[in-house]
Image (cartoon, rainbow, N blue to C red; front, side, top):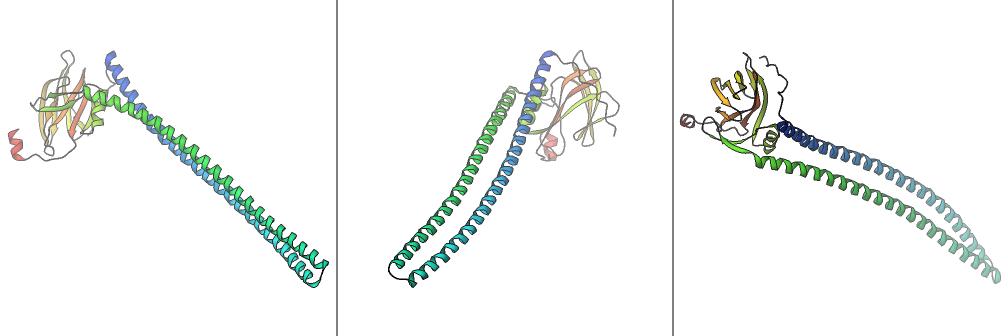
Amino acid sequence: MATSPILPPPHHDSGSGAKIAILFGIVIALLAANVYLFLQINNTKDEIAAMRESLLTEITKVRETSSLTTQASRRHVETLRSELEAARRRAEAVAGQAREEALKQVQVLENKVTEESKKNQEQVKAELSKVEQNALAASTKVSETLTSQVGEVRKEVSSTKSELDKTISDLKKVTGDLGVQSGFIATNSKELAALKALGERNYYEFNLVKSKQPYKLGEVMVTLKNADVKRNRYTIELVADDKKVEKKDKSLNEPVQFYMSKYRQPCELVVNQVAKDRIVGYLSQPKVQTPRTTQTAANE
């Protein structure tokens, strides 16, 4: 089915334009805040991954260096032990002064072996401790940065939510053309955004021009029959559940109500602007699908 052509939006008065600009600003700020948080978290993850890789490489190098040092120390210790054993054998082979001198040499060698082992252990511990300190400092810095960024984004989101809450509190309830108490209605784009944020109904915005071909809006076909700019009134033809009904001479912001078989509550069409051969507004439908009984339909 052909879609009706969409004309440029009508000229808004300064008050309406300012409200729409504020709404767009709020929505853009919310989107920007979420995008900013998403990008910052991704960047932080990349930094943490790179830092982790760097730390693992550094630790690996330290371990390799430590392993080489340990191997060298072991060889050196083995050499010293060999010399020690040789000195002991020489000491056992001599007597008197020679034996005493040999024992002194053995003691010197024993002390040297102990010092070398202790020195190697302390060096390895110091290098590992330094790596651990660097890793802890880097992790703390990244955590503080991420916490700060998340805090800022939360403030922006909270501010945007406050604006939406204020708009919602300003919304009004009216009675529709079927005499049924309507839910909240929106008279401009800012209020419509607030209604969408409530999440109670599905909303379909439209910019409908006069045409012989009906316009598909959600589950409904709508045809604009007449638009009276001077009186801000219009006439439309609705087709829902294969039933056609004409809504004649309706006014701005008046909930035009009609029932569908899958919903217990009425669907509502609200027009916020009437221009030459064109109307602008939205259609709202319940989210919960509760079929209406025959008795309920008869009573209504």
